[in-house]
Image (cartoon, rainbow, N blue to C red):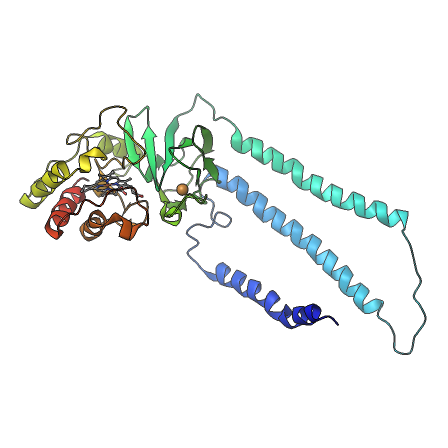
Length: 353
Ligand code: HEC
Ligand SMILES: [Cu+2]
């Protein structure tokens, strides 16, 4: 027996065991925060989940049949002790050849036809007579700019939508190729410079759904997260109320610390890259590749820096003092703030609910 074969035999138990244990561990993890296949929360992810789960069952049947045939052949056609005769030699059997050409072809066709149907279903333009929330999504190293043109809302990283209402994203990029991926709501879609790719979904569940840039896009690719907050239709937390809130200008500072923070923001160069409606507007066309997220309501975000740090005064202070220490290569300047300045500006930004 060759060495390679012997090594393979020795490793076989772990080759089988590790994936099995990993699979079990994943299945036993109750949270499944990003598992589209057991927990789809929108029509688009339900379609992908259906395909995944159906094909998993069909493929398992095929695997089982092939392995069973293999085991039967291994046992039945073993060389018997003392039997030195040559087994019957056969060279090609047209019936078999036809069978193992036709069966896999049927299997592949059986997968292709419904898959194409699913692809068309996912790419279908939503019915224009219904309410549609259109959102322009621009991937930027390493965060997401979100523009609700009709509503006149510009925000970042945390997308707000309404349960049961059709969402149509228009994906593009300001620099390199990114990919939008919030598994429980919809599939993956590239955000490519100079292109505009649609992505449709209709959320079915109220809650927060997390995602991630899914295309290696530079040093902080892994720190380019997404959160989608699905609001109920009615009540104080409704989507309409969010729209009303977020369209208001920024809150005015109410404490001396917040006032000092606003001064830091105005005087230390933050205004070159950040809009705060009512405090600092960027001239139209001034948006450059490095300009940063709109901070008008930054205090109401769950996270800052694209799902990298929980939103808190301490974390904002850590971030503004040295963004690159938090996010390698971050395109926000390190403006050399003192501890006091960082604390003040954090108090000011946190108050912008
Ligand atoms: C050169 C442009 C630039 C300057 C100047 C700048 N920033 Fe930023 N800022 C950015 C970019 C780009 C990001 C996004 C970084 C990322 O998430 O990768 C950002 C992110 C942030 C965030 C996180 C926002 C969020 O929602 O995730 C805060 C808070 C922030 N900046 C505050 C400040 C403050 C305060 C100043 C001034 C002391 C400042 N920035 C100066 C470009 C800039
Ligand atoms: Cu990216």
